[in-house]
Image (cartoon, rainbow, N blue to C red; front, top):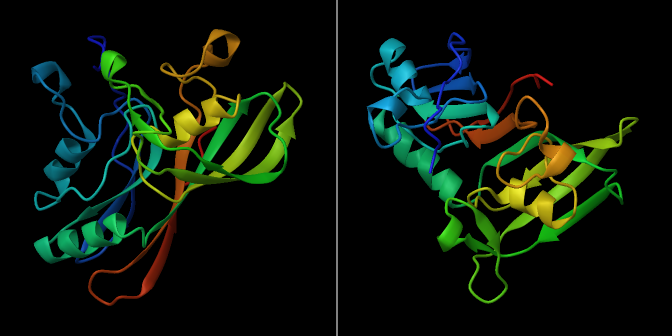
Amino acid sequence: MIDSSYSPPDDPIRVVHTDHEVVLVDKPAGLLSVPGKGEDLADCMIARLQRVFPEALLVHRLDRDTSGLMVFALTRHAQRVLSAQFEGRQTKKTYIARLWGHLQPKTGLVDLPLIVDWPNRPLQHVDHENGKPAQTDWRVQRLEPEGTTRVRLYPLTGRSHQLRVHMQALGHPILGDPLYATGAARDFPRLMLHSAELRFRHPDSGKGMTISAPCPF
């Protein structure tokens, strides 16, 4: 459950790309992708976007605390095509994160099945018997002198909280994570996770597109 102190940032909408079929925005951290339950959780990315693009349609979501790229469809055709690409794992997503500790080796794959932790939802956890398959590639960008690591994360599946749980399972939680980090790792002004790049096929032309948004941390 989202806590009652929801106070999303007032950042203006950052449109990264738009054409006759799609619009891509750089969502700020702290803003819901879609409305939550209750009037106090009505402010969200799609509601703000529809004030400018009334025809905008949802394709996928980002966690409230994650910043970065989201793609919205501007036609029903685009929504169908893009949704099928996401469901078929035909899109390629790149995230940038900062982790607690120094992650070794420089590259690797997390392959741990995930399922909702029902007594503590919306938390997810690793469950080898009942969890759904979840895989994340990582590539270390640099080991930081303050005892943290900057990484690129490549989710091969799209489970809820996948990157956050997988990094915690490695013993290197994402800095500032209010759900999965503890102690000093949690004491950061925001979740240090950003959707930096999205690759997909344009729903009209079929041409491959790569769109990026600069990392704010």
